[in-house]
Image (cartoon, rainbow over all chains, first blue to last red; front, top):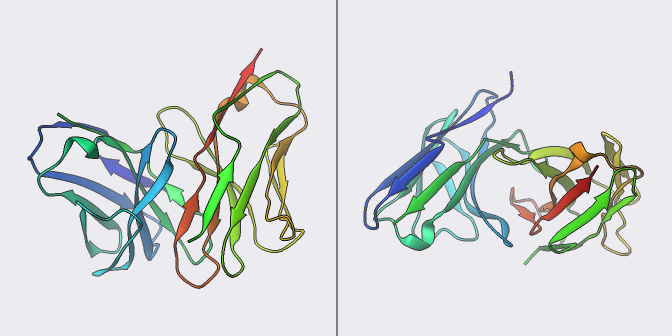
Length: 112
Length: 113
């Protein structure tokens, strides 16, 4: 069963707190992604991971970092969260270049 | 950089109406083009893709044709149903060898029964 999972689904944090968003996939895809989704802006790419410990900045990496220690697991970390990081975050994986992306259900983050 | 522009905001139709959502792109190389659909509370789902000029992608009655000349990939459906109400995203997969994707801002389709 091809699936991307995300935890938690909903999260409320105070400004300055650290945030950990987790993503898993069961398809052995090498490439994984983190996006944020804001009204009127669509999906914006934060980071790409090409495999374990092989990560690359996307279009809006400032304020975020990632970790990938196992192929099936990709984490997004916000050190000292800011209110403008309130958003819906999606993780995705893909089997190859220009191939279909499989998205998780999203994490809705509110930073107060 | 690469970009995707699609019909802005919301499209409101009645059941059995014809749907067109416009998508135009600007990209280097030869990108792959995609349509995704997103229902409330879920992540985007792949609808279909096309990877070469004049190729038609289709799924669930939706279709689009890759047109390199007009840099377009317009989404069409002959007869929409209330269940088609969702947000639709046009996207491109980078054509220069990296693994990036660029998404349009999304178009909300509301179908009234």
